[in-house]
Length: 83
Image (cartoon, rainbow, N blue to C red; front, side, top):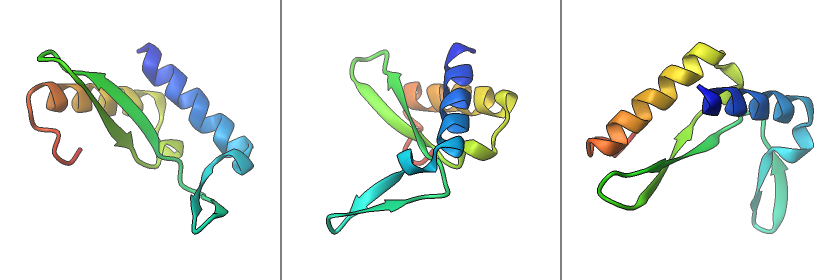
């Protein structure tokens, strides 16, 4: 559950401070209304996979927990081609 709490806090902070949420395109910073977080998953067979939690600002704590659990299960079972 701790990752869900941390991700929720990050999403709330980025909502409150939108200047920190964006990306660079063609050398210029572009702010974004959507908050997409990277979820790093350690694979049992070795290695690391990073999957995205899209629109994290719209998810409650329980939804985030369920999303993280699903992503971990799919990544570790080889089914995380598109999560």
